[in-house]
Image (tube, rainbow, N blue to C red; front, side, top):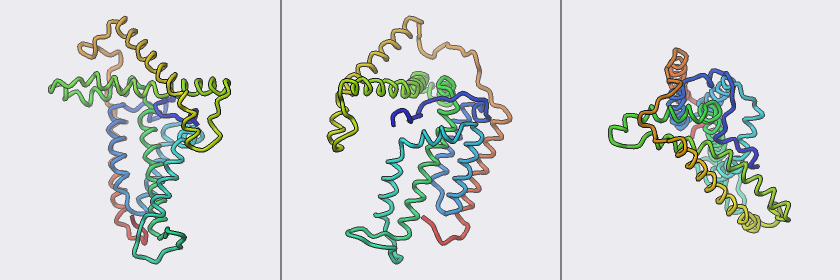
Length: 274
């Protein structure tokens, strides 16, 4: 399961999303996330799925890779669906009842809609940011967008660097976790049998060496930065300057059109609404 987590990973390519300005991608990601929560009807959610499919095509990434990245959140989707299915009340007649649970038509619709919303949220934000944007470009984008905060003596560059390093080391820590678990299995550790509590206790021998490895890596990184006379963002120059192009402005217009269309879909009369 850990090998399937693709959070924070960058997949090189030359697709339209890869070549887009990272500042625009960051702003469009925020806009995309906000717009998803305004979907209230079946047509709006169908429009959400269509837009996510278009983003997948524009990214040039394979569906197999994206499905692999969604697998780790399967239990979150399942839990969200079950909670909304059994705990959503309605004035209509229930579909069926058993024990203390009563399932209403609105509960079924809400469960499906919430699962679709989370899928679109995870896929869309990943495609726009981490999958198609290098950590360095993402750092530059965050720093440039938050640069007005420098007037308030807020260390924007340090914040952007911390965000970039956090994303950069997620795949590394996952790889270290897999190596430690394989080493523990070779010594007779069992992580797959027994109750949930027993399996959680079996992970304790993994946490200590993982924390030691994380602190060691952070110390090595700090020493390497000091040896290279790293002094923060003040006075630093960049080899590649960020510039907006016509394609970036076109993407912004398309996203605005997407938002307007989604709002319009909410007003199309249907028998199903959240």
